Image 1 (cartoon, one colour):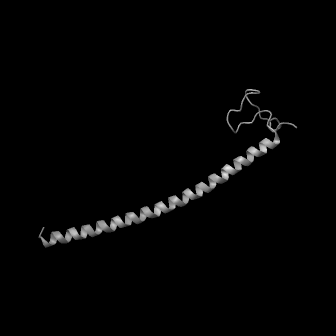
Image 2 (cartoon, rainbow, N blue to C red; image 1 turned 120 degrees about the horizontal axis):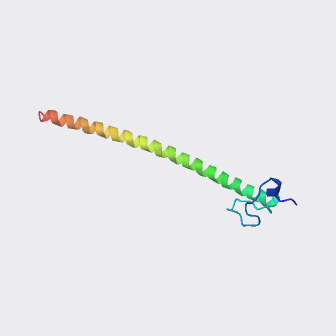
Image 3 (cartoon, one colour; image 1 turned 135 degrees about the horizontal axis):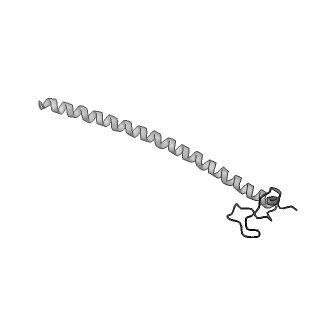
Length: 93
C-alpha cells in the first residue's frame, strides 16, 4: 500500500529519521496509522471541549458569586455609613 503521508504529499525533512513529535508522520505512515492518529486527535478534541464547557460553567458560577459578594459589601458599607452618620448626629459632631 502507498503510505498515507506520501499520498498526501507530505515529506519528513529527515528521510528515515524519527518523527519531530508524536503527531508527525513518517514517509511510511499507513492509512491505518493515519486513521488511528486522526481518531486520537478527535478524542482529545472532544475531551477538551468537555473541559471547556466545565470551565465556562465554573467561570459563570464564580462571576455570580462575585456579584453577590460585591452586593453584600455594598449593603454592609451602606449600613456602616448610616450607623456612623447616626452616631455623629447623637454626639453633635
